Amino acid sequence: MPTDPHTPTVAETVRRAAEVADPAGADTLVTDFMTRFEDRDEPISSVGDPDELFAEAHGIIDPEHDSEVLADAVAVATYLAFRRDTFENDGEELIRLARKAETVE
Image: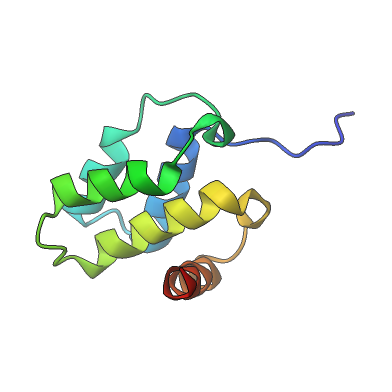
């Protein structure tokens, strides 16, 4: 039995963030964010600067940064990239933690 927890892929991390930020799957910008990374099956831990990767995608998808839902998805994806131990936390809790982490930086 492995002692290390599963390391999610980039795609799994973004999918979880999208589910948390947009549980109904109704926001097209969040769907675009998820689609952008759906084929990225490398471990999130192998990405050098996940915060830059997700921020760049955010800027391409929503240049004016008008979508709070997309901002939450990006924040949660970034948070999960560094805090993989919180992957299964409650969605509202993840959003709160991700927003708090953003203000600390």
